[in-house]
Image (tube, rainbow, N blue to C red; front, side, top):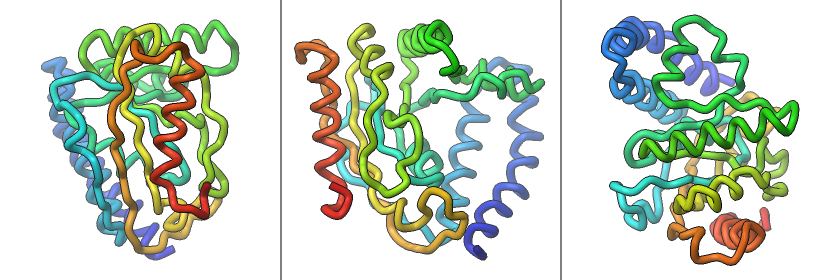
Length: 234
């Protein structure tokens, strides 16, 4: 638990100072870049402080000037603070709609083009996809954990269909990502964090216009993500 407290304590100490600088700048200028940079650097530093090393594979497969939908597996709370800082340029993510009601934070998230998500009914889910499509049209990446929740055992869960519908409708290339090792470091339902190495593999992007339909796109993305997972999670 000491390493977990070190990570959380670091975030608790540093985030308020960053907010004192980042939030006023963002609200005054309408520019999110400084706040985004501070947030991702603090997240990354906290994970590294806790003894997590990160090995990155395949980042050179991406064109940093293109917009992608990054689709990743999800097995640990460590995944977002490890993955998001590695993505070239700014990325949007899906955020619970309730958080947008918080003053200042909600406005900052809107300026950052984060997408509110509410899966309570079909209409709300469709609205979230439309909002994500608008973000992509602005040239901002989207990062989605396609299982929709953390895997309890490190194996791939069934994928949500919405992100693949988004890719097919928008024509945005999909960049599959495999995060391996975080399940062993901090699995679901365990707060203690052990030191070790997480490997993030960026696979060859997939042009959705070159596949026949959503089902084929899902199958290709799943095969690529699965390929870089250790054998015990196959």
